[in-house]
Image (cartoon, rainbow, N blue to C red; front, side, top):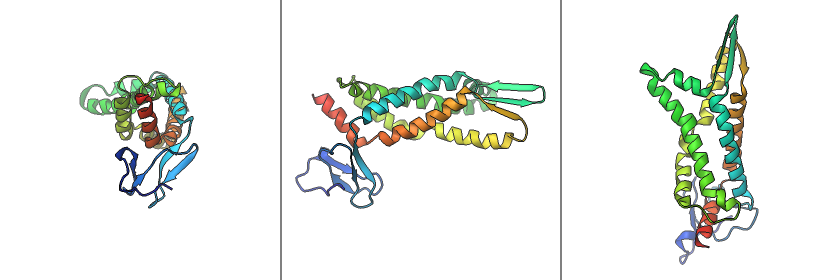
Length: 213
């Protein structure tokens, strides 16, 4: 577990627990070690030497899959002679006119634009570090915004809505999932795995060391 801060502790060595706000003093975190809050046991720092490389690879993979999500068929509905296929882009554009236009814009922003922007920001901030190069200009700004956008990238919420819709439509039509559906499912899983690799303290420490070297 992490230690409580001493009186002469440097500010950049202090880490606040995201759950209970307990303040801790963290120096160098040993490799493959988890540092937990002394009060509530929440993990507040993890040092995994390959974590940054994994985050960048997973973000790049999710970014490639996102192109399939946007433009390839998401679902196919069959009922009698009627067959309908639609991609996420088609769905967004189908509500682009009239009173439903704000909903169309919201779906486009929260399901496509913000997740893509967050993935791009992570790659910009951590890409050079993953190959042991100097960070690109604005890396700290990009990483800060990637963290800010995290609650607003709602790909997981979209998949919950799709699951509910599938249950309701199952009795009305024959449903077939297209490549975009499976790609979107893969993105949700990849994002969850990527987030488990992210330790804010370790990543910011690695970025600061790279900027000062």
